[in-house]
Image 1 (cartoon, one colour):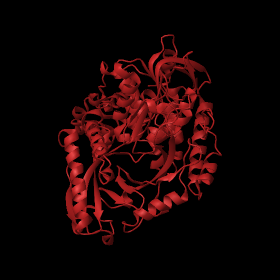
Image 2: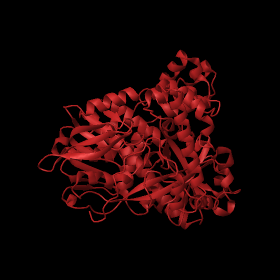
Image 3: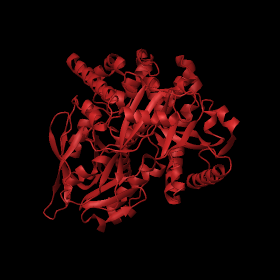
Length: 578
């Protein structure tokens, strides 16, 4: 994907033929729906008003998990569904992006807690084996206090009497979304980011027949004719479905979840941690060069485009992590922060939608108006099942003749991943790289690592590490510009080479170097390059300033002092009487 394929996609989706399915929303659910529809042979278009994965789907806990806590609510069906999807992602769909991850569950009492926890984790393992039709991750293992401290020496000995190790999986959420969109494009989908739906068209009977979309890069409006429209806009669900004009649909509230990032060397442990809190759970998750710790769960009443963390959010996470860490970590250890909004689906439906609705434990699909399907709720792990449900619902009886095939459809980078991985020592030797460098590439690009190597062969300068961010190669920036749909500098730092939370300055020190690589590929002149650098710098500084504010309102005010480089159109508030 690049600027040229985006322009061609906009031309094609607005032609006289129209599309079978128009998907609104480029997060994990919308991207999954686009892939599901395209692989059924439907002419499919997907539009996103910001960059791909710019909302909740780049600001999650980055876990693919079954939801261990749901077992204690006896929701076996939900956990089984999620673990089935986890197994598919690990084995078939995205084995290069999704990695098995061990977690320690510290125990505070020696007998009762260990007994009921062992039963719960045992059921988790059993449902995993059943869903994956075999073992996709190791089963639980019990540890004494001494054994647990060997695995995680920085745990305070007073915080546990023993532990259980169990497995889930982790994923770079934004890269998963990019892979879904790019795979859908490979199967014929028409994809355009920075493209906002501002109106929906109807025929005389009131059926939704299409949408007016605005190319936010140029300001040009187009009309896309569609036999089915599927709204997958998360926390924007109500604003989008209101364009259908029926007053029906789903109600979604927003809850803010904050995560912090600390350097890998600051916490001494070889597994993740699963910590139960008075409100929910807290994860301490190891990544290549850092730890992710979160999350919070607080109502968000501000505007939904730019959620930001407050000082109170960061204090909450540090306090709960330090309940088990010794020595503790502090504000000076935090190198990155992000805040995302969970779309909390409310019970029931609005208007007449209840007459035509499919309800799951965590997501709901309904008809907001004839021709307009809406899906909301769910979580990243079950995006594929959500997508299948949404397309089945939209197609109605026709779905029986066009069943979903995404359960066995690998994403870009998955085909040939095992063979490419077996060549990692040869790749390292040929380029003089460490094994860690090769593993980094393999688990970001999978078999597409070969494409990066070809780019480096053609231009050896692309094989050098970035001076300001040496964990990344120049080729990764170039690949983002040539293959991953980048339109702006912020797209690279926020969602491709994610220095926005991996460095203390949010990647500001790398701006000129990254712009120097991507700018020529994207055809930027000096003025455009400077505008992109200045825009990202102002945004990053505003978000860092927001982190010192005590309340959501004050933090949002600090963030909104800086205008977006590409503003979205204001669709207005939702009428509470609708």
